Length: 218
Image (cartoon, rainbow, N blue to C red; front, side):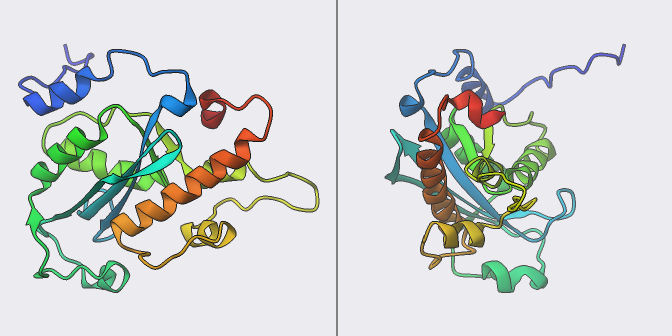
């Protein structure tokens, strides 16, 4: 007993619907894949102590951003950190309509489906989302995940003279690809910048031999 983690019982129907989308394997044709590019604004950087303030996401289908299918929600602030307000501009009693964390997660699961998730420094966004799911007794997200910070480095020519940096910020990517930073530090604005950067990275990688979805995860 206790050696095997039991699957949580009584998972809600919306989780079962989400989970069922992963029964069939993904298409191998890159152009037919759906990507959900997301960003979260949070009260800070601790998975346990901080909370998600907003989630913004856009879908990419057939290598173009589907402008009709944006996701942009604000969460009720049970925790508040005035230290981060200057970054995201979300005040505790702001004028935006906010929903509960569990309602936000339910809506997000319906939106993301079995798409491949793309984010910049994805480990942070995934950590915040998975910790939120765990708080409500739900399992972790099942989606494949790509990090634009990591795959950008695959576009760089390695030489003794030029060594890639360990990390590239979203601002650096925006600068390198001449992407407008007008809505930087809003969840949807950052998701859009990340999506444009992702498409530019893919265009560069497609010029190389042996491009495939598998090559992005190596």
